[in-house]
Every structure is written in C-alpha cells, then in structure tokens.
Image (cartoon, rainbow, N blue to C red; front, side, top):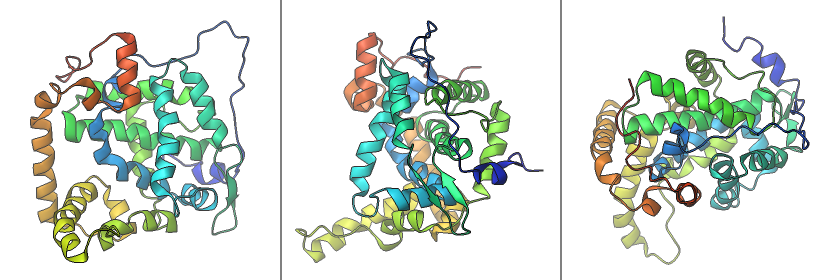
Length: 310
C-alpha cells in the first residue's frame, strides 16, 4: 500500500489548511540555530550544484507545475523568479525572525490556485502540495551534502530530517501530510517520484540541457560554439547527474553508464576537496544570508561537523 494512500484524495480537496497565528503567545517560536546541521549545510555555496534537482523535482508533480505555469513568470524571467523566491526561504532558516519569513513565504501562496488537466482543482496551501515543495528542500540538504560535501551518517540524516520538521513548522501550514520519521520520509520520497509527469513547466525549464545553452547576442557564433561545448558537457554530466532517474525520464534527458561514471568521479573529487573548501573565506563558502547569520551569532562553521557523527 502506498505511504501516500490518501494523497490523491487530499490534494484534490484543494483547500488551504493554515495554522492559526497567535501574536499574543508567550511561547517562543520554533527556530533552527547554529548548532543545527541544516544551518551548517543548507546555505553552503556548493548547493548551487543541486539547483536543477530542487527546481525540477518540485515541478514534476502536476499541481505544482501547473501552479508555476498559471501564476509565475518562469517563462519570461526564470532567473528573476529564482532571485525573488529563494531569499525568503533562506531567511526562514537564517534570519533572526524565522517565523515572520516563514509566514511571508506562506502568504505569497494564498491566492495560488487553479485547475489541472483532469479538471480537478489545486491550491498551493493545500498541505499535501505545500509539504511536497518543502520536501524538495529537505532532499536538497540531504542529497547535496552527501554527494558533494561529505558523506552523512545515518544518524545525521535522521537529525536533518528531524530539524526539517521545525523548518516546516515556521511556515504555519498544516503538517498532516508530513512523514513522522526519516524512514517514512524516504518511502514518501520514492512514492512521489513515481507520480512524476512531463509537465510543460519542467520540460521547458530543462530545455537548455537538451538544446544546449543559448548563445548570448554579443558573442559571435564561432566563439560560442567553442566556449559552450565544455559548458554543455558539464550540464549534461554533473547537473543531469544530480537528477532522479524519474525526472530524467519525464524530461527526456539522456543518461548512460559513461556519464554516471563521470558524475561519480566528479562527486568524489568534490568530497575529497572538502577540507580545501573549509579553508575558504566564509563569505565565499556560504551564500549571503547564511554568511551574515554566521557572522551575527559569532560562530565559524568551518570547523564544525566535518566528520560523520556516529
């Protein structure tokens, strides 16, 4: 039986289920801090290697892909959308007002609703849909760290998942669809992969991989042909290598044993270089929001969590 046995029914309810905000509550709001593994790894600059995994897996679920198609400017301003949506999520982890930013992210989605191909409705704040979007960020932390930074122990993976519950609580959306254990999360993830479809949003968003990077107007074609060859090879090996096979399949992205070997070689080199990365200036190692947060708490994360916990 599917771990998401009620998923199809619940997501088609298409109703927001929002946690009540109590401005007079004396209880401190939940937050993550410098002692968490999510703080250590989420804002690491190497996370850029997983941008396509994060953005793509989200939009392989029809309701989310359709929401982006209906309400976003992804087709006209892909990079602009990323710049507008990325920082608020990052600030939910790293700011001194995480609940404020979590609620801001939630409230961005209050009017995101519509219909999918079978005529059923969707709403971005339906817990099944909103949690799926969050799950892709949890996967991002787990996958990028374990693949490109250093191997995580099982205990650390469990810890990251448990911390992700605090992260999700900051958004103020019902957690009814949230797995309760790391093992349940893995089963949930596999089940969601089986639901992937070739939605227009994600097929469009991966077109640069299939067709090659577009030539900038000011770069002559002969020059671009030379310059773009290694860039496209990198995309088709490293970026496609980060994707689940189910996403490669629905997006028509070629993969083979040779590329898999090259990808694994690149990943091993990145992990081997982790001590070198940890000698970089902090502002180079972390994205700006994470860098500022570490500076504000007066903690240098570079010596922290560099060997797997038991």
